[in-house]
Amino acid sequence: MTTAPTPPPHSAWYTKLVAARVAVDKAAADTALAADELRRYQKFARPGQPSAHTVQLRQKQAAARQASAQAKQAFLKAAMEVAREAGLTPPPRVPLETFMRGWMDAQPAA
Image (cartoon, rainbow, N blue to C red; front, side, top):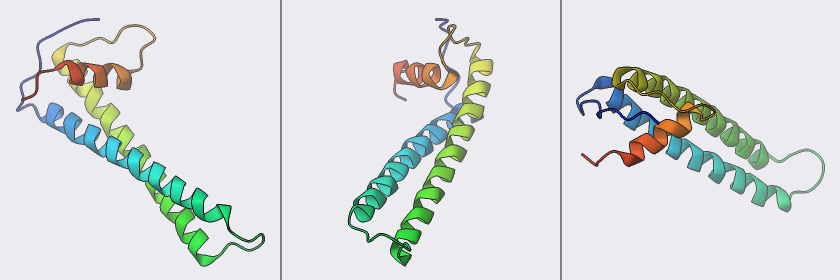
């Protein structure tokens, strides 16, 4: 694991990385909430044509999944730029997302 100095807090990419991580965490929670709500409601749904409420819940779940994918993409883009800027190289067989999350957790809080 290569350690390098923390990029300056005023770094545009580091700021984007922090914001993207918050967005990824929020989107993951929203996706899980939508899935749980749909699962609970479908448990008691009658067979046949889905109700309007079920359709709305499925649309909500699809929107949450799309937001989650976009947030993850933004996080990975910012992570690549911060890693490049700071001279970080993830170890072999460690995904960039996992490496950057651990690296961010290890940084002192500003």
